[in-house]
Amino acid sequence: MPQDYIPIIIQSFVVLGFVITTMLLTHLVGPKRFSKAKLENFECGIEGMGNARSPFSVKYFLIAILFVLFDVEVIFMYPWAVNFRALGKDGFIDMALFIFLILAGFIYLILKGALKWDTR
Image 1: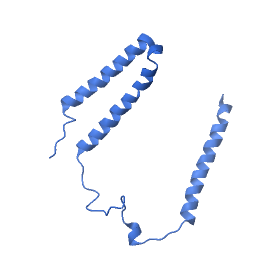
Image 2: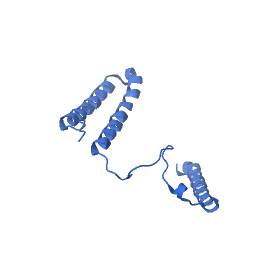
Image 3: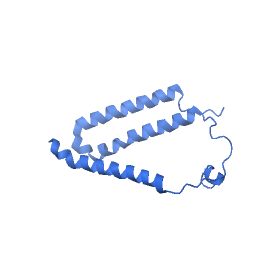
Image 4: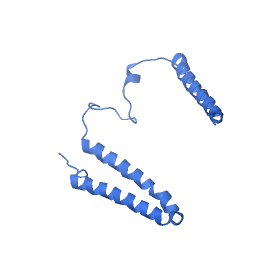
């Protein structure tokens, strides 16, 4: 029923109002002191060096994205393992297909050389 969503809509408006009000008040009331030391980059207490816009190897980002992709895929296996007996034969077949597709993607990446790290 649509009237069941009224508390959620009210809570959403309250949250948005709080966030917007807080951001505006901190911007208007907060101190505004600018100095050379405050405007410098700060990274864990280490002095900055070099240009922050120096290019990274695309391989670094590719490995990071592949790690996240396969890590998320493994998360789907945990609920399946917990409910293995309850899911029965259909659950086993579904997970076997899922694992097959993951392995096919992984083999494709290996054959394309996506995991070879060149130091050049």
